[in-house]
Length: 146
Image 1 (tube, rainbow, N blue to C red):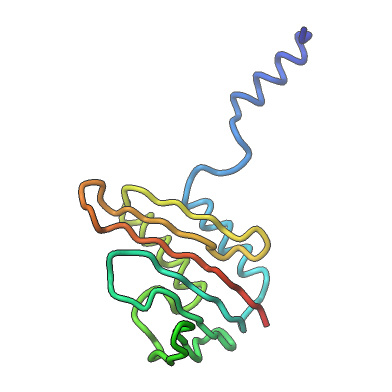
Image 2 (image 1 turned 45 degrees about the horizontal axis):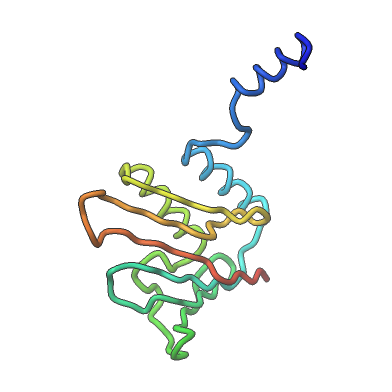
């Protein structure tokens, strides 16, 4: 049985709720700060896209000194024009996609951020619950700093 002090502390913890944020804007701000604190300007990411849209759906993006220098379809080895349309630009492009979903009040937004670096590891957006083919998802399946 809990004594009065323990019951008071437990009630305070339960009323305070979880320590993590449930506000996507706060999560985005925290992730962007974690990313910025890493000072990574040269890296390679592999971004996969899942949607009812034209491909390619998986791209290796090479960023050097903060600028996209090449984009390659890993399935074919084909170089894509830089900039290639879509959120494949860089980590900041992925953050911008999340920010747009928040600002435009997407029906559903689920984002998982990398705990070490802060970049979005996965983004899932459903813009309209009544539309059948408007959902889109992105996943960073590989990240190589330096």
